[in-house]
Length: 393
Image (cartoon, rainbow, N blue to C red; front, top):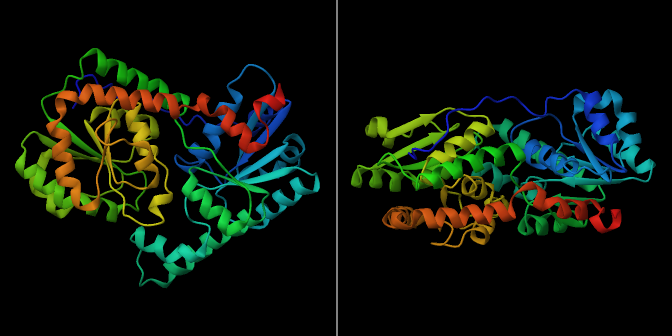
């Protein structure tokens, strides 16, 4: 691994803030946005509510402010509705709370938007989603739960005035399904991630990207539903580990060690699920970040977040050429793209170009630092909310 990697850092959930403080945070501005999510988590809530509010609040003037709220906060629903000018409901299933929230904003003539980051609002794609996520198709509860979940998300979407999403491909699906105007606000890096990542990158650059002599391939799973994605690259990994004694594999998250990889012993390093700050540290410690995805409509609607979170930590990604990754990665320039049958050859290509690793990692870092940092998204967020900077001047 890179010798400049930082040790584990203390972590506390930055969004565990009392409701009274979050209400004051939102009330500060002249124009106010309320982000709603069912409950806090490290994935959708972080990207689509917490990060958005952080950007909008990170300006000293009092023009725009934002707060985020959860179902547990709705005992003060009137305060939220009275204070906010715009409501953004993030990937929340329809129920009586959602209906009441939307109605109260609409009665006051206020805009309601729905933010969704996956193709999980149209039951026509339910079968595809279930298969892609390797769910038990013989279990009737699986079909019941997924159709109910997707259908309820779609119903919430239909009740809103517009939608916000992560990329143009998913935006087209949302518009076709709902008939609503759709705005694209990409996922991006928040301040905490950026601070740590810049330290990681600076240390790696100062050391000349010195490593311990091993070459580490990293697979970082953010949820327990990526078994089929990982399965795609197992034959290539087995072949590569056999051929090159320098290689080691780091598997982090919910993926269990594959039976075909057990014979490599300590060369396959299993890491448990980490909070997103320390996950960033681990991503920054490997040479190559592997992002295999099945090729279908569902995966082509996913964000390119695994590319830019690795890039800003000075790590090169090798990814499947889905819609977003093919747009973000220029093969051989700021990363590598690999189709399903190419993983062994593309990883060998990358390893064979280690002499140019620092140059490519620096290119990827600059790309991520320009396109995927929160403050660079402020105007994009405001336009999606119908509150462009020029309007507030």
